[in-house]
Picture 1 (cartoon, rainbow, N blue to C red):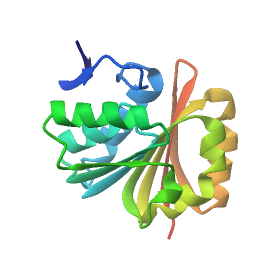
Picture 2: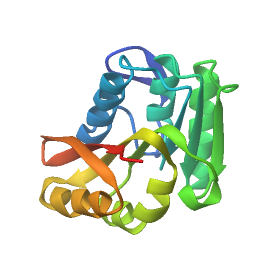
Picture 3: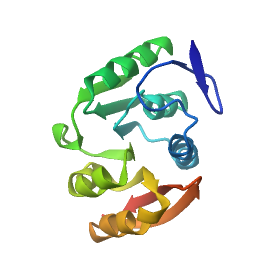
Length: 178
């Protein structure tokens, strides 16, 4: 069967990988991506903790040329690859096993929908993946930990743009100051 990620028809299979588009953290990320894109559509996106691939695939459907999806779970990457094929996007999505330390370079848009503890732990390397003046979208943050996550990234030179909370989960948007 398939799950449709709002607000358009991205086809997904039922799977154990996180991310059908309905969880508040995923929905907030999708909305943040959509909000960032009309300003200037970046040529590429890095999706850290890609899970089912829903965020990377959403960005590709919205006009981003290329996406790299990272996950530490090999099964999640298989599911993400299936979803990319299902949506004829496999040629634009590169999937890599590991965290942000296994790739080099920087992206104009980096999205990480994981949990607060890993977001804090990988903050130094995640910030290095953001291109000059690039945007960072962080989600999977319980509302109670938003200020701790925000301050961690601000100390590393990211300018906080805004945060939004829904059903106890927060998405945080930041921009590189370099």
